[in-house]
Length: 350
Ligand code: ADE
Ligand code: ZN
Image (tube, rainbow, N blue to C red; front, side, top):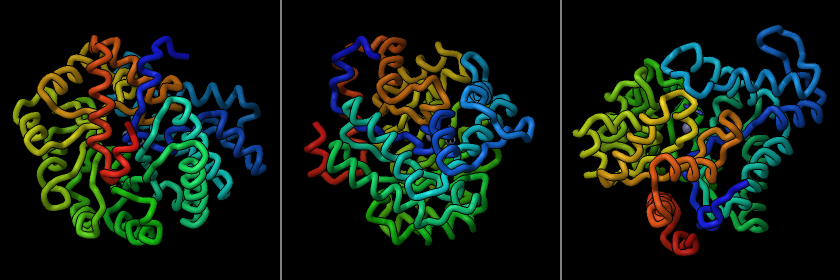
């Protein structure tokens, strides 16, 4: 519940949300019950006996506020929880319901347009077919636009801890669905996995007309060199946006480059304050904004934070950056400017 009707009422564009990042314990339980498939507790190898037990496990695997997720164990436990969610999705109906869950939240927060990440490799490696996944997403995509007035496109992310060959295979397999897909991204565990490993597939995607973005995670485990590659070299001349990239706030040259190229950054405050000191996070976000870098606020993985969606991310940023309504409105306009919808579609977002 919000106590800020002004922020609630702003028409919103959300550019950084993983569809798999909304898989809560409750959704997992719903799908597993419906499909008659037990969920195995990775810590005991026994099936979870109740929703409460599953909720407890989900909560303990989430990153904890105040801890630093530069700590490898916490990062791995986040990914363990996150990829565990993929295993409960079995049918086209599951994929449809998952996407509708996002779209219903979006409609309630006055989100008019979203670009939604999905990780196809995480689904195919547990045996899901492209058809099951994409037909479920497609039906929800059409229904949301028609009945909820939430327009959207999808961004296919490659898992950077999988091989470049796997990325290329998935790229080719996605082409029949390209009417839904506006861009290509890069996510998952960044340690030791520079964007340059994926140069070939990004260059191909760019020449086929897709937009390009990549995650640069926040914390001391993630080198500035990865941000540099995203700005200047992936897909030939660099990406069209940066996801996160908050480490750049400590490097004047990188900030200058980002501004010069007009790259927007998607910023997800709840993702950072789960594992970085709060003051530092908001000082850095402010530094980017004050330097004239275009930032757009988004939710990343709501089910792995504190059930925090784009609205809660806007509210926490408003509070700790000390922004007034005018600045919050400017952030919403940034997101419209940064999005990859047609100019006509952008007109309808205001
Ligand atoms: N995939 C989903 N959430 C992610 C995150 N926070 N970092 C990297 N990859 C992700
Ligand atoms: Zn993300």
